[in-house]
Image 1 (cartoon, rainbow, N blue to C red):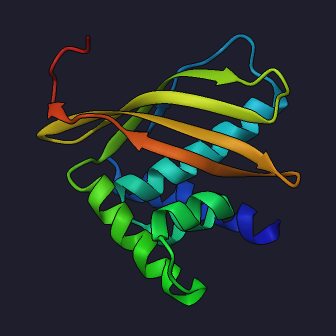
Image 2 (image 1 turned 90 degrees about the horizontal axis):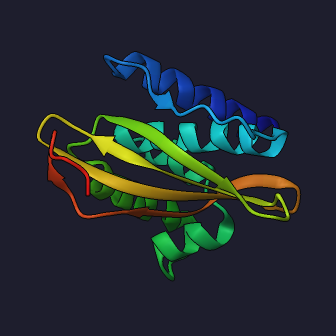
Length: 154
């Protein structure tokens, strides 16, 4: 747990050093302790994505998500595959905004939707943070079709 907390803090510091504007998270009136913790994990993961920091992003992934990203490789090869995936997903994107969140009825997963933006393009994303054995991890991340930066959302 100490390592995860250190990664979360590291992820937040990396974003602060690299970004011109701080990330934004839409406030919600029905935030729970679970959703606030999940939002912290999501923020650190997204910071890792826009700064191309595969180590931060990878350390926040659930075991099953890490395996789906890295494929069927030996565990010592996973970090390189995850870093490669982060490079592809985050290329050209420098900022992110969470626009909505939804907590599962059992309060064991939180889904966030938002937009990652860069100078030339933007992409919608969905990230699911789930509790696995009492610890919160990124269980899923999907990036939608990229469009020209500043294009209106439909």
